[in-house]
Length: 387
Image (cartoon, rainbow, N blue to C red; front, side):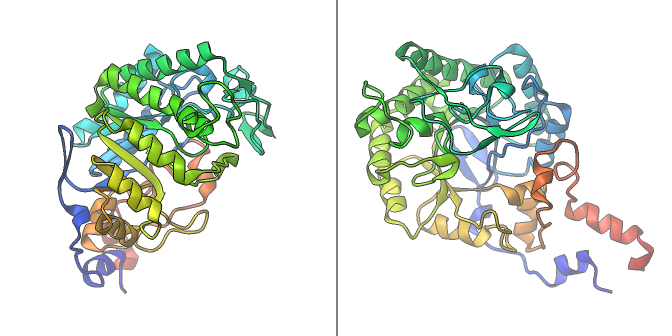
């Protein structure tokens, strides 16, 4: 009988790859170039406080070169879905401190992603009417504690509210550092508030925060600069998703938005730029790489919602490294494989991602119960069938 351990040790050869080389990110020394991407998993309490199971989950994955923890809201109106983490009061800080302590004890390093949902929200989730650049509703339903409901028309933000939200991002960054994170990632992607300001389909404003590309990038630039002023630019990253249409986003002029955004941030000194669904076959990726002189984290374009490739994205990650990326972020592969770095390094098979519904339902299933190679080998040793 061929066991899982046999397959891992005899049918697969150790992999030589730049993915396993050490790297630097500001003052951080990363043992490898694999980054655990931020993934919302709805395991917080209803008030946004991280729960103990989250400390277990992240500590299990501490061998990643860097963990970027899941999106946390910088204020109450920014909440997207139920049981999403937040970082705008002391209880949130205390909850996250348990997580960062556990990861640090396991040898890991963490940033926290800051995300305001904008129009991606619902009064049944936050108790508030969502706000957005313009009163353009999400063309989809929103998940709430009572199930999916039609999206509501968001309230257009006033200039004062825009300024207050910028300040909330800065305060959230300070809270994150207080909670033990090495830094924060500003979420400017995936159709949430900052992305809504960037995109012409959701930003119909005629004031200083709309209209031209210079106007539409203004909010993103102000948020990043405020966060950098609050905690130091070496503690700040920005995530972008050029051309991504998730959550009903229509940018309209992708090729103009992102070069202008990077040029406006060139002198800030951010720790990194994180490009989602990066494609080394597209000219825009190479243009962004030329413009961005700092660390570039690239998230490879992998099948979604289809299954992951058998290597979890390793080959695509290596293509991106060859095209100029410095670090590679993977999501689902880290979700299903707490010891992903070791599995990829040794050529061992990966755990498949189980039913996607388990990602969001709460509890251990599909979250903290994915086995490591060592656990599988121990189970095979103890099993009568292995004898």
